[in-house]
Image 1 (tube, rainbow, N blue to C red):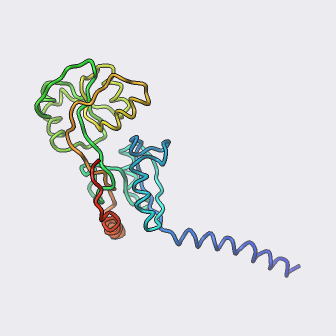
Image 2 (tube, rainbow, N blue to C red; image 1 turned 90 degrees about the vertical axis):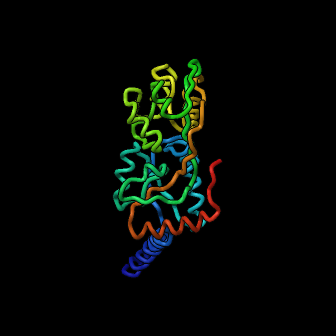
Image 3 (cartoon, helix red, strand yellow; image 1 turned 30 degrees about the horizontal axis):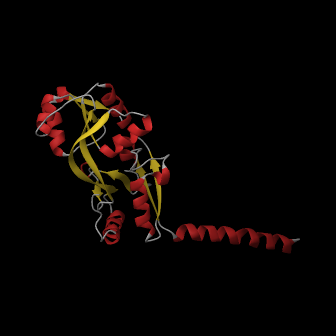
Length: 236
């Protein structure tokens, strides 16, 4: 009987040891993210285009990527914990104090969008905010030229908590123009069956980076990313 028990212990222990070895042999990066389709999203294919690009990059070094999705401000706050290496995808302006930016993993655009029925004209961002009520997403940190105009003309800033709300306000005429990523707005418009929004003018292309917590381990990870991204990711 003792011999049988001894053999059972061996049979049970060996598979367990094998599983532990496999987990510890592979590095895992855990990041926080937001639902910002089509770049990132908990319920879309491959968790979004940018998440998939990052996952493919890390596969070259056999690194597994795990992603937690939360509202954007919560993602940024949670990434301060050592459970995570940081948050992604972020514009460089959204890399908070205590974090450092990776090289560009992907690219986004920032553009002026309008309701189809409206006619608008402007020569620059300052004049846009001077003449029109402009929809923006409250949780985003926009490039300086846009942030400066928002501060200069606060009465013409209509801020909302999400891209979906921004789209619906623009479609219903609550504001004639909005500033956002045109790919995100068009993706959501198609999903919501909204057809009365139009691209007006591109403002800038923006890198999408990982905001990594500023510590020794992440500095090594940034060095690795520079190596893996030696063929620099270019805006499409």
